[in-house]
Amino acid sequence: MILEKVKSLFSKREDSKEGKGLIIFKSVKDAMKAEKVLKDFNIRVVAPPPEIREGCDLAIEYELVDEIGIKRILKENKIEPLRFISLNDYSLKPLELVKVKYIGNFVMVRCGNMKITLNREGKIVNISGGGCPDVPYLSLKLLGKNIYNSEEPKDIGYSLCAYTLQKAFERAREEVKKLRE
Image 1 (cartoon, rainbow, N blue to C red):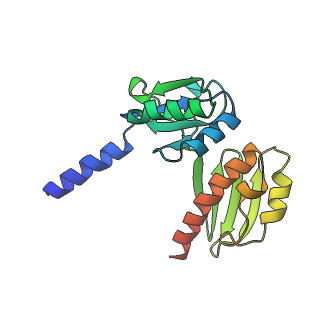
Image 2: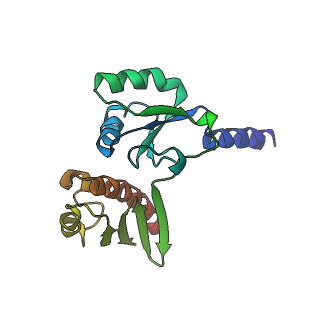
């Protein structure tokens, strides 16, 4: 019984936004570059709540204890965020970028405006959404391929749509694994 109480305390802390912050960027390019240079920190890319969205549709959630180090790395890489926001000061929560929906033996994973649909075996049966010029090329290269042995969107695309499709692609791999179990 005591062990269950301790576990519940830790699981609540994991979901809590206490001790977390958001980095708001002017452009998607800055947010994507920041994600790469901050890979050694406990960060995740999220959508900022509409109430505080200023620049692009991407933000980085981070641990407040890492803020000094994060600011140093961003400065060294000439990335200038619009602002840092402590989530302790707001009742707002960042929005999840990736959403999953099961449809029979298929799984559709959405990130931003991009969607990828796969069957139980991991075959990519549909890619849709976005408005970037490389979306048709991404679809052409990926449709009909197995998600475990195909090229990745990040390696063949160059736009925000390729970036969000990559996020959906990574999650889709995890979801197909669940379908197979």
